[in-house]
Amino acid sequence: MYDVIVIGAGPAGMTAALYASRSNLSVLLIERGAPGGQMNNTAEVENYPGFNSIMGPELANKMYEGVNQFGAENAYGIVESVKDFGTYKLVHCEDQDYKGKTIVIATGCVHRKLGVPGEEEFAGRGVSYCAVCDGAFFREKELYVIGGGDSAVEEGIYLTQFAKKVTIVHRRNELRAQKIIQDRAFANPKIDFKWDSVLEEISGNQMQVTQVKIKNLKTETEEVLPADGVFIYVGLDPLTQAFEDLNITNAEGWIETDIEMRTNIPGIFAVGDVREKNLRQIVTAVGEGGIAGQQVYNYLEETK
Image (cartoon, rainbow, N blue to C red; front, side, top):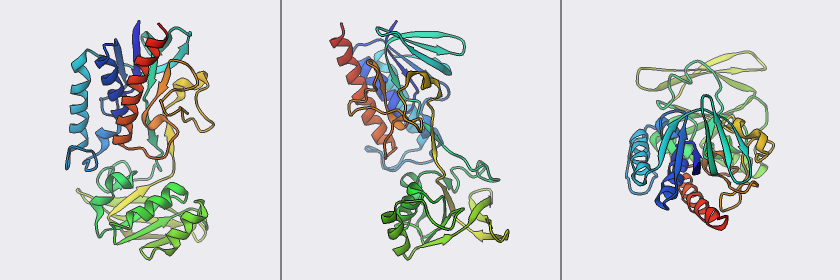
C-alpha cells in the first residue's frame, strides 16, 4: 500500500512524485514509456526558467534524476483502470495491480495527427504542434497552420511575430474560431488563408521541411508550395480512457479539478496536460505537480 501512486512521468507527474516523496510519503511512479513525456519529443526548450536553452530529453533526464533522490519507486506499466474503494485506490495495469491511499493522474494528452505523408517523418524538423514551444525557431520563415478553430487561429497570430508569412489552411470556407480572434487574424497583414483546402503531403530534404502539397476540396486541384514549417492544430486528445469509469472527466474527456488539483473524488488528483485548461507548457505542469504533491500530504494528514 503506497501513500500515493502517480500515473505518468512527464514534468507534472515527476514533480508531484518529487514533492510527495520529499514529504516522507511512500510514492510509486508508473510510466508507460521513457520518463519525460512530451519533453522527449521537443528538440530544444528555450522557455524553461534556469536554462537559456536545453534539449527536451536532457531536461527530462535531469527531472527524472531529481525524482529518485527522496526514495520514490518507479514501475513500468500501462494503466488499464483505476477503482476507488474510499480508503484506498486500486490501479490495474496489464500484468500487475497496485494499491494507493491517493492517486495523482498525470497521463497528459496527445496532439491529434492528420496522418498525411511526411507528418511523422518531419516531426521536430519543421512539423510542430506548439507555436509557443517552437515559433522562435522560424524567424523570417514561411509557415503553414492547419486548422480553423480557436487554437489554430490564435497560434497563427502568435507565429506572425516571428514568421515572414503565415498561411492558415482550413477545410471550410469560414473559420470556426471566435469572431474576435478571426477579426485579429483578418487584420494581420502577415496572415493569408487557403479556404476549402486540406494538407495532402509534407516533404523536404534530410534536414527540414521544404514544401507542402495543398488540395482544394471544391476544385480538386493540387498545388505544391514552398514551406519552412507546418503547425498542425486539429485537436488534442486526453489520455483518460483508463479513468472513464470514475466519472471525473468532462464530455471531451478532460479531467476537471479545482485550483488545488483535486478531482471530484477525494484522494484523486490530476495535473498537467490531462486537465481541462488553456496553457499546456512544461512550466505550468511543474507548478501543478508541486501543488498536487503538497495537497496529497495535506489530504493524508487530514484523513489519518
